[in-house]
Length: 436
Image (tube, rainbow, N blue to C red; front, top):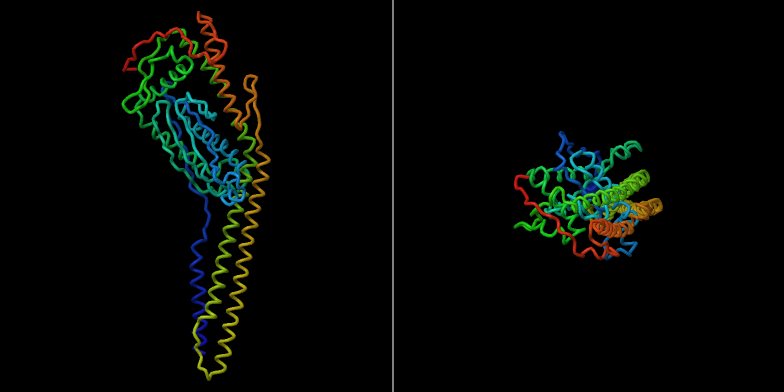
């Protein structure tokens, strides 16, 4: 019986080794420590309060597989959801920045909105109910890069998935938005006061130069680092600057309306998107657990079969009782191992079922985030593509309004916005006081 004992121990050792091999893939999910955006503890002077434009994120759909549904599903990329997320993520980041009290007007805007103090752009590289990863770039109007394509990522805070109320109270990936906000604040705080003021002045002059390039020629140039700087300022009572300021206020009103649309869109999709995220998280967790079980059962089964086949004979050729027991052990090991392998394969099949369920959940959500429209000063703006086009049309109208109003003081109004380059009265400059 000593030989049989050794055989049994050998089989058990193989099984234990297989169990240890797969044991490392088991994870325990715990709520993450919460990261919050740093709140302003004092009032920031108006001439240092920087406005922020958050552009809708690139949905991150690889062009090489954009039309391959099977490949997209394998990477858990669902195009309609990604396009909705590109607006939702931007809106969540806007809300985080706005709530911190550290910034001026923070808006989600189309890509064509350019004349803002600070711009945020980014790309979604991974987004499921279990993980969010973004690539983020931040620049100011002078061309200074604050954050250069930095990756921000986090696993889901499972505390947000406990109840519907907790899901509404805190986004499961709020840590990502808070980290971006805190990094932006660190860069801004590192700038001297003069640099912050210059950013606002450059923005104002860029807007004016876009409307009246000849009239505003020479007010901006580049420093040795290639950054835009203010070379001189218009006189405070200059009539052209006054008109441009009024037009800029109208532009801000249109941008506010577009930003309101993004906010409404995010509000409308919030509940269903939160439920989809939670369901996605649960499906991914189930799939991972099933795959872990499948690996364990398959490896243990294979170990048992190998042990039954390759373990050397331990019995004397004349000990018939020992050989019968040894044969029974080998047969049991082979049968049990085969059963374990089949069970493992069944678990792999179950994992595919969970993946299919996730796909169905995604398709269901896609139907709930269809594009919507909003009216801006009598014009219909559509978020998917049309917002960008409509804002470009609005920019043409701004040129038109400027030229028409300028015509009221002696310059003939052109027939269309394409005449923006026509000769205009020059703005009277004043030297820029370095102490300002």
